[in-house]
Image (cartoon, rainbow, N blue to C red; front, side):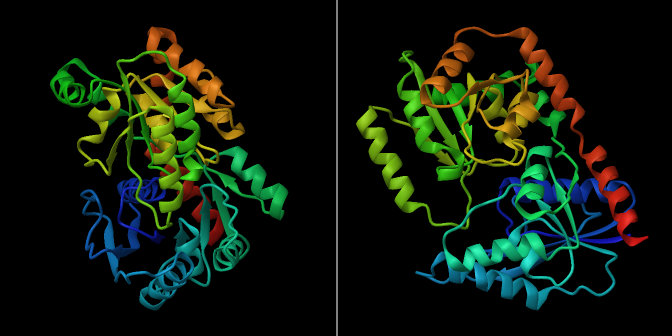
Length: 360
């Protein structure tokens, strides 16, 4: 089959990571795959090398100083729509609400369901849910939310994870690379995903401030986003000062370095308020790092038995303290086994089966 996968950015973000890995796995199964995306900020390629069997179409998208979020989203849709060439594809598969609005007919993966108050964003989000002719969700919890809220039945196909890449970063052979991060940061709790409301960044600050171990630092990595969270980040920084917490904010970390940063962490915090699967958390589990997550149905579904769960800041702090205090070999082994079961090959095969059912 000729398959077009559509994304909205070349930057490292969960949905973009998913799109590239799925495209490579589909190509490895003999499919003809093209990934379409917008090249923001002058980007002409993705944040990492991509298997040459996958064709790439990066559509230039210029930055406009002072442009608001709503207009930027609408311009993103218009730019991708104007460039996309649908003829000849058996399947057009949009991975986000921007790309789902940019095409007339598509399959849509709903990674998670947002709730916007900006009129343009709310309208785009609604269209991206109701217009596609078929839907995929990466967890049963999100599929249930889609069914209850919109009466839409989705096919559940879990994410894959590059378990071997993160497990290798935790191996004895990679001790030197991990030690470089420890020398730079000391002992640390890591969170990947940036500083934004959906990621529970303020809740994480409150939880970290309750820890009594003085030699542990809070480290935040990642954070590429289309949205303007400057006001939220200002609140976060102000609250950090009030709490006496001095987080280390790394921003985007190079693709090749990320596994070592994860594997060197004392614990991995994932206090999201809304998630579809938790790919970054699954990468931490693959690296054998103790995982603490917010108590959401989707995270219970995916990480039950291998993570500590906290429903509020004190609960998260308690689980982080436990994770830092002593290793749990049984939980680590269970986590590594769990991550090993989520392969991109299995993900691709399930997609191929779905595509065949849709194309007859």
